[in-house]
Image 1: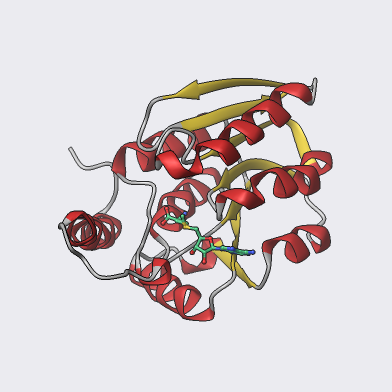
Image 2 (image 1 turned 135 degrees about the vertical axis):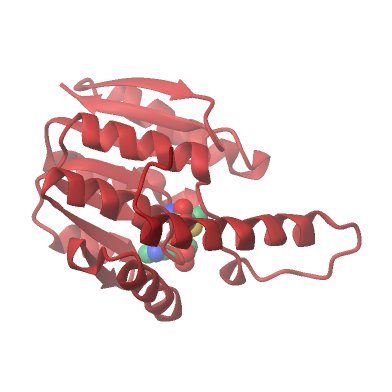
Length: 206
Ligand SMILES: C[S@@+](CC[C@H](N)C(=O)[O-])C[C@H]1O[C@@H](n2cnc3c(N)ncnc32)[C@H](O)[C@@H]1O
C-alpha cells in the first residue's frame, strides 16, 4: 500500500524517474562533463522513507533541511511536517532549484508546510533562531562541519540530525568522516551510521 496520497506519490515517482535517468547518463562511459547543478542528487526512496519514519516517529514539528536541491527530500519532509502539524525550513543556494521545488511542493499539496530560504546556508543558519527538532543535512559536503557548528546550539533536546552521503560517493568520504568525528566529539549527541541510501549518520541530542 502506498505511504502517501496519489498527489505526493506522483511527484515522488516523477523525481525518481529523473534520478534513474540521471544515474544511467552519468554512469555511461565517455559521458562529457556533467554540471552538478543539473542533477537532482536526491537522497532516494530508502533514505526518504527513513527520514519520514524518524520525523513522524519523533513527532518533529520544527524541521530544517540544509540543501533542498530540486525538492525531492523536501517532499518527504513536507509530508512529515503535515503529519506532525509542523513546518520545514529548507535552505538552498540556487534560485532555479527553489523554483522547481516550490512547484513540486505545490503539486504535492504541501506548499503551506515548507518555507524556502534562498542563499548561502551558513548565512541563513546564523539568522534562523531555531530551535530545531529534526535536521536533514544534505548540502555540499565541505559545509557539514561549519553547518553543524551553527545548528548545534539551536537543537532542541531530543532533536535528530540525519546527515547524508556518509558512505557514497567515495570522494565525499574525508568530509563525511570529519563530520562524524565532530558530532561524536560534541558530547551531547548519540550517533549511529546506517547503511541506507548513500549512508546516513543519525544523531540525537540528549
Ligand atoms: C545533494 S544536493 C541536495 C539533495 C536534496 N536534499 C534531495 O535529496 O533532493 C545539495 C544541494 O546543496 C546546495 N548547496 C550547495 N552549497 C550551498 C550553500 N552554501 N548554501 C545553500 N545550499 C547549498 C546545492 O545547490 C545542492 O542543490
